[in-house]
Length: 186
Length: 398
Image (cartoon, chains in turn red, green):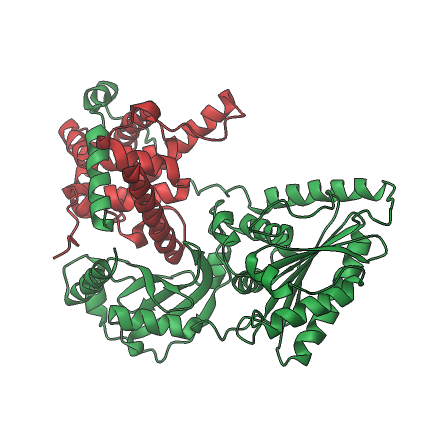
C-alpha cells in the first residue's frame, strides 16, 4: 500500500497541543518553547530555506522565529492555526532578509544556490528543489512535503487559490522528478 | 522516484540539514516583556506584476520600431525586402523583393520540400505564391478540418507594409481553404525592425519562433523549448486561450482552431472522474483550463466535490491522465474560481482563463456534522474516500 499517511510532528499535527504550548510560553515556560521548537524547527527551517536558499540565512531566521514566538506569545490569539502563525513569522522574516540582501547587492536578483561543487547524494532532492523550482513552487513543496501541511492550509498561508497550489505542486514535483532522473542518468 | 518517495526523501534531507539552535534561542529569551510585542501578520505584498516586464519589452520593441521608421528603406530588385513564413507543420519561407515578387522559396523540413517539389513559384507575387503553397499543403493533407491552423508571419522593415501584406495574405489563405471545404484558422503576425532574412534555424521558421517567444513570455507554464516542438494547431489553441493578453495583441486571428482533434473540457473532466472514481453526481464544480505539460497540449482539471478537491492534468488528444493531485482532506472553502485565479499574486505564474464546466447536479452527501469531523481532521469515512482517491492517483502515476 502506498504511503499515504504523513507522519507529522505532534505540535504540527495537533493545533490544540501547539496552542497549549504557546499558552505556556506566554507564561514564561521555557520548556514549552523547547518543545515547540523541537516539533516545528524542521518545518520552519525548510520553509525559510525555500525562500532564502541559503543555509546561514535560514538558520538566522530559524533562531529569530522562536525568539519572536517567545516575545509575541502573550499576544497570541488562539484561532486553531498555530502553524500558520509560526510560518507567517518565518515568511516575514525571510522576506525581510531577502530585501536586506537586495539592498546590499541590488543587482543580484537571483538568490544563491547552495551546494554547487559540494553536492552529494545526501542532498540530491534538496539541491534539486533549490535549483530547479521557482520560489512559489519551493514554498509549496516544502510546506507539503516537509511540514506535512495540507494543500488548503498552504493556500491560506500563501494567499493563493487552492487550485493554484495543487497545480503548482503537481508541476513542481514533476520538475523535481525530471531533474533527479537527469542527474541519475549523468 | 515516485512522488511520495520524493516527499519523504526531501523531508529526510531537510531534517538532516536543520541546525540545532535551541541554546542560542534560549539565551536570547529573558523574562516575558510586559508590553505585548505582537507579531503582525502582514498581508503579502503584491508581487511584482507580470505585465511590467511585458510592458518593458513592448516599450523596447516600440523604440526599435520607431527607430526603424526613421531609416531610409532602400530596395534593390534582387534584394530581399520581405520574408513570409507559412507554418502548418511543415513550414515554408518565401523571400520576396520590394515589388513583392518571389525571389526564392525555402522549405523548412523534408515534408515541405517534398510537397513543393516541382512547383515554380519564383517570379510570382507573394499572394499568388501563398495561394499555391496553401493549396498544395491542403491537397497533400497537411491542412485538414481537424488540423486547420495556418500561421502567417510577415517580416518587413516597414511595419505598415508588413501589416498590409499580412492582411492580404490572410484574406487569400482563408479563401483558398474555404474553396477546399476547410474552415481555416489563420494566425497572422508581423515582424519589423530586425533584419529581413531567411530563417537560420533548420527546424523552426522565424515566424513560429516569434509566436513561441510571445507565448512563452505569457506564463512560466509555457516553456519555449516545449512549444517549439508542438504543432501549429496546438499553438493556435493556446493563442486563443491567451487571446486577451497584451503579449498577443499583435497576433491577428481569423477563424477558430478546430477542436475536433481534442477531447474537450467536458471530456477531460469525465476522464478524470472515471480514472479516480469520482461520481459525476458528486461534482459540485469543475473547472478546466488549457495548458502545456511536457510538450503536450493538456487540460488542467480542477474538480471540487463536497469532500475535497482534485487537480489533474489530462492529455488533450488522448484523454490520458498525466498527473493528479488530491487535497488530502475535505475541502469546504472557496476554491477561488476563475476570478480568484485571475487575481492571484504570484509573480511567476499566470493562470490561463478557466472554463467552468457546470456540475451535473449539486448533491452534497456529507452532513454538517461530517464536515465538522473533517475540519477537525478526524479520520472519517470521507477522508478514507479521499485516501482511496490518493491511493488511486499514486497507483496511476509513475
